[in-house]
Length: 64
Image 1 (cartoon, rainbow, N blue to C red):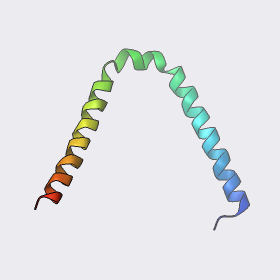
Image 2: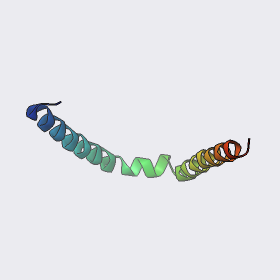
Image 3: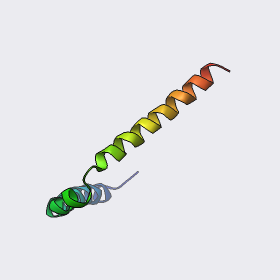
Image 4: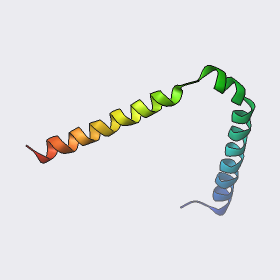
């Protein structure tokens, strides 16, 4: 499906991309702590909301 060269390129691209993303995140860590304080609550609420949607969907599907 893919040639060996394409697979090598994809692997190297992923490794370099992740390394650059980690470097940039660590560089901006102080700004993240300052401006995005408390953003974990939004993530938790969003995950709870998605979970409730799945529970509601399965409950309505099981009880016609």
